[in-house]
Length: 315
Image (tube, rainbow, N blue to C red; front, side):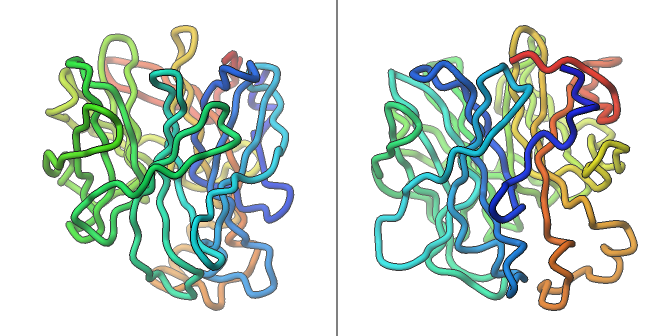
């Protein structure tokens, strides 16, 4: 498919607030699933609270990524109330799907609430069993990312808001018990880490609210940052005219694709006007989101992305 003509890739049909996508192949159904934070910006009282009370939405593609349709939401509640689920990370290992999702109790009207990362398992991506919270010594841990290490262990990277919003690493033998390794990315505050392997090197992207910072590594331990962020300049495609936010990279058939979300109505003038506000008086249209996809390529040794470039998405 010509992706330029199919932008945006997906919009949530209920609330128009799809964010924080993660994309994975469903081995049972033989199709691709996109799990995302289902924000609710089109509610009459939308403000900061529209980013809370989120369920995890599901969109599915039966044709390798050309067309995505809404399937519903995951049932992850385990205690009383209407609670908040953000930023799912899903991997497939040992015959099971493993999900790490940020959890906050209740719905908040300001950027508050203690957060923790919950661990679920599933055989089909539809029905999930809560295995318990990830034991992290912080009440403000969010945005888990998991990647296997060469020694058959697994490493988790997550944002710790108690440590200046740095990215912290933890290791596990069994995907359940984790031990803290230490801070991995400290040169800037960021969130939404995503780690992948492409053309013989490891990469980490982080959402630093000025596009994505990009880091390279030979060993998944030592990271070197590229000079330029990607997806920091507005694109020309429909609903792609703002910075790229909280993404997931899928490497398929030797090519790499970044799935990310935008606030398409947030112009530079908007950002200057509302910077630092809790969105109380922000128009509903400014909180609308859209999911986009673009191809990543290596050029002169650096990972780059031209969001306006036509390409064929073939998962």
